[in-house]
Length: 173
Image (spheres, rainbow, N blue to C red):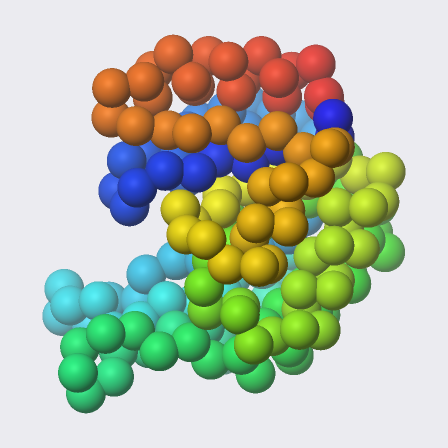
C-alpha cells in the first residue's frame, strides 16, 4: 500500500484529520486542496488551491460553482488546465507525498485530470487525500486499487480512525 485516502459524509472531519495528521510532518508535500469559496458568508462555489507557490496564482480557480438552482455545477476546464498543471508539477518535483484534498464528482468529465491522478497513484510517491463519499467510475477505480487504503470516517469513529490513519502515515512516510 502506498496511497491512503479518507472518505465519509460531508462535514464529518476528513480534511481536519488529514491536516492534523500532516501538521508536524517535516517532508515536502505537493498537490492541492479543494476549498469552499465564500462571499459575505455564503458559499458560492469551490476552488482549487495549489500547495506550491510556484504553481499557485492570484486567480481564483473555481472547480464548482453555485448555479441558479442553488446546486453546484462542476467546471471540468479548471481540472483539465490548472489541476493537471498542479499534478504534473507534483510528480516532477518529487515530493515526499502528494496531497489530493479532495477528489469528487466535479472531475467526472475531466478525463485528462483523471489520467494524471492515476499517474500520481502509479508513481513511487505516496498519495494521501480525501475522496467524496460517492459512487462514480473514477472514484470507484481509486477505491478498488490494491495499493490504496481507504478509511471510512464517521462522527463516531473519527478519533479512532485518526489514530489508525496517523499510524499508517507514519509508517508510509
